[in-house]
Length: 443
Image (cartoon, rainbow, N blue to C red):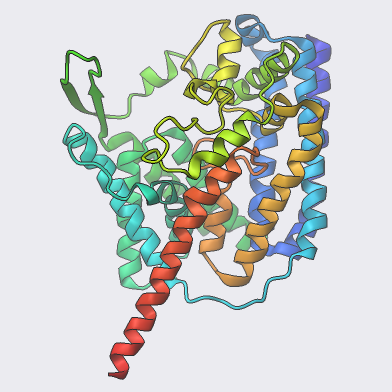
């Protein structure tokens, strides 16, 4: 066990060094976009990979024994993550200079307003759905993912630039954040909202801290944590049995004890940050035990654009078995850890997911596709927008749960038709509104 831990720790240091060593290149070629990308890559390595071996030593391999973590699988996962990260970074360095988009800024204020309005509506609809036991539903399902993955991060980014916004945008930002806090109510939202603000602060201040700014960030952090803890959590429990249509609605505070299962502060850190690498080692176990996913997760995601009204039994995205939602990687590795079918999920390594699909071929090829996707976001939106593009980059990380810059391949089709297409439609609507306004003024 000790040797496995030492190897994993050293591999993590190599990955972190690789990420940090490329920082100046990314700043030169992609400015704030490159900073945000490497900031969250560095965070991921530091918090979820480098910390895990240390936590394993401190807890006397408690979770290794509980979930039967294999030494070989564990070390191989770290090697896979090192190789996939190296290829991902080299691919971006190669691809990004080749992508040239004409630098013409769009007038994005109206587009931002539309995105925030859609997000506010989606948040409010989710809250009302709980309050009315499902009687009121979100009628703009097409924009639901855009609101969650783009609109919410956009509001966080605009919070940093709050002074520059007009009064209407300020009201929208405040309402979106307020309803998001009411609806989301998770640690991930707290942590990654604060980290997003911190990353922006570090960039604009060239990694120098000023005392008054530290105070501002501390106050914002305390407000976020306090609001999450004090605002009621809206929940709806419905009996879905055939003989009952009863439901129960509850408004409760943030139940920290139920979420931690009585764990101490250290045990909670160990559990939250250490489980990803440990559980992701089960991808290796699945692959070598004839449970490789192949192209199934990618193909099942690709056909997701077809409406269920047209194809009622279409496959669930990112699944090994299209008919079984719980055959997604995040469920499969938990099931493999407890040796039984489970509907519990766990955050996972994107490199491990790539290995689960096509083994070494997936590890060597899929990071290049992921790098191409991220490079397109950076190059196109950097040339066209100020704020929307930054939110698009963060949306590709899957906030607020995963925040994985090296996105796994089966999620890319989902992002294209759940975020890109709705954003394009909003852009067309914004253009139409501006043209209509000009026409009316001329009359």
